[in-house]
Length: 338
Image (cartoon, rainbow, N blue to C red; front, top):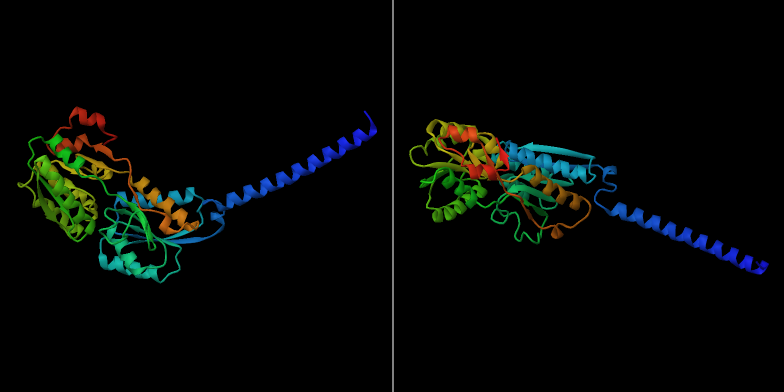
């Protein structure tokens, strides 16, 4: 090979090596930049403080809170201090919690259920707020347009169709003509659900009998007032009634009245059957929204989401105690059996 050609070849090879190094360096820089812009990158290096305001203690809402925390951890937000407050069903306490959060330098607030979310939205106008387990966010005054939030609020609704729950009444007791509903008339989400129940009941040939309880201590008396007046009892999305569910179960067991409900945990606690969402998953949806907000995504770009995957649950032991038998075809459809 001529010497001149060897020199040219060597120079060309050196140039290619140098160019490859430049390209590799650029690729490394780009990858690092992309990683730091993702919700999980760098999140653990910064400390965050999040306030949680919850209306009452019961398993579904507790599961939503845990799901929220799990989702944030999954996205890399592990250096988080949570200030968890519980109003224990008292609206004055919910307002006090909201005022407390309004005066503190929080990075974000989680509102759990409608009453506490309403209180915190009223008191806090700058700190980002994410709600969960809220049935009717528009009717509750939390957002105007769920598809395009305009203030500092977005979240996840647990709005569910009530017709499948009422159909359970007919499946468990085909000759049923009346269904009682226990609820707190002071909760806007419950008032909304009752209206939905009344609309859905008529085509099924059911008349709705209402029994109200403003506190958990009044729930048993409300349930007792339905005895002799209804063929079945239902509880759908009412925090007060769910908190004292065992007292409703007791009345239904003693009087052979089937209880159908709108959440999975209440079936586990003694209702005959029900349709519901997984509230851990509901909380995770809210947690993912929070991760986006803490990563810099404007709330206006995070629309309100709705719960997914309605599941049928049955409790054969409870059904027998309440004087009914779960039909085989219904049992075969159940996702959860207790």
